[in-house]
Length: 301
Image (cartoon, rainbow, N blue to C red; front, side):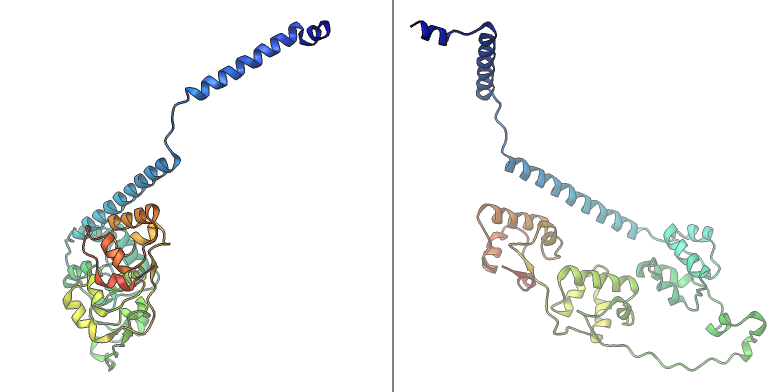
């Protein structure tokens, strides 16, 4: 008995240590019992994803509205010669600083405007701007040869013999492989429209039919009807987009899918599983805008 009592006896220091341990354990138990509940990580992540996507969509819409407003501003041109136009004259006509710099830099590098259409070749001059400026462009009646010769060697206008030139043959192009430099050789297709056609082709994954050109911004029926005889759709394959594996950005960037449709696709993938076929995709997006029938050829499952 005496041995048991000695074994159970503790020194003052040991008793303090034991009491401290018990207090800590009790505090931890209370902390676990009264800890506030936290929202699941998945809910918070989904909420943050929706917020970020909404902000991105708002930014895209704001940028599109800004571009539309800039395009709607009409110029106030007056007769001018682009070979001698000053920065002040450009500002008075309503040209942007970027357009003015482009014209002046072109001249500083030795470029000359021999005809009105030379101005349209500058990448900052859209077809809409050129249509307003063209009637006011004034160029002296001299040939390209006169610009290249020193002034001492330039002959009088009566001695200048115009060289006979044959019209350049218009090429027939494959819409899925042609580059923008070749597209501008087609009638009614300027640099601005050519760049838009190539950019739209990249977003689509390739053209299936010529009529899709009418979906390109700035392409009206008159231009399409003029250029159409010189356009073919080759045998090149279409780049399809995987509905079940592509990320949100890739899907929403496709011209035939909008933000709400892509959001439905992602909700289906996360909550119910993969989309099996075209019929299921149609049923899933039935409440949204009507699907473009050509979309079926651009998606895979």
